[in-house]
Amino acid sequence: MRSDELTEERALAILLTNLNRKAKVSETLEIAQACKYLRDIYGSYEMVAKRVKAGDETIRQYAKIAGLPDEVKDLIRNGLLRGMEVPFQISRIGNPQRMLETAKAVGDMSSMDARDTIKYVLKHPKKLVEACKRRIIESKRTTVDVHVILVPLSEPIVQKLREGLRKKSMSNQIEQIVEQWLKPKGPISCNIQGKVLALSLEKEDYEKLSTKKPNIILESYINDILEKQIVNNVNHSRAT
Image (cartoon, rainbow, N blue to C red; front, side, top):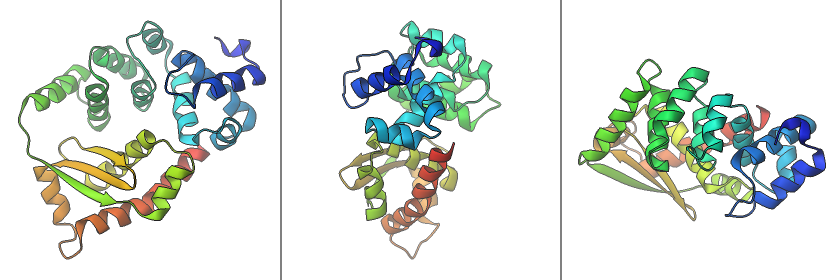
């Protein structure tokens, strides 16, 4: 559906029908276009989120998909890129040609491997996309010593979850914070269960983190960092 075919009522209906259910009725691009259309009308992702009772981070991510190059949108239409997560991560790359190269490269990968590849592409802007893909594939073929840190999340972070941010979106934000702060050499992953964050790091990055504040309980240190950053990240995403 083109933006000139949308109306406010039609866009609201698309979001109300799709965003609060697991099985989507509409295609990803149709939902994305509706989010962008309403964002332009209401002036913020937060206002759209309130109207459709969804998380404003979810609205923001779908709206970013609407801004992808046409060639990447064609890959979504043809089923090479599925769901919302991978197309949104591709939208973070910035360079249209590199977006297209990445989209083609990850089309045959699982969602997790695709996301890891895109993250690697983002961290290494001068590397060829295919080289980034090979690096991720090779890393998953090798046995790696991984450390999992269980971090009880503070009430301010839990409150953000309750305000409507999806757990997957919150996990992505936490990963970005840890990457900016720790600058890990290997891939990391975050998973939220209830009020507990499971943060997985390779051995070298775990040891690097452990030496930052040797006299402070590691779980408390991580929680303090996240509590300081997560609200700023959420507020920034609402303003952009």
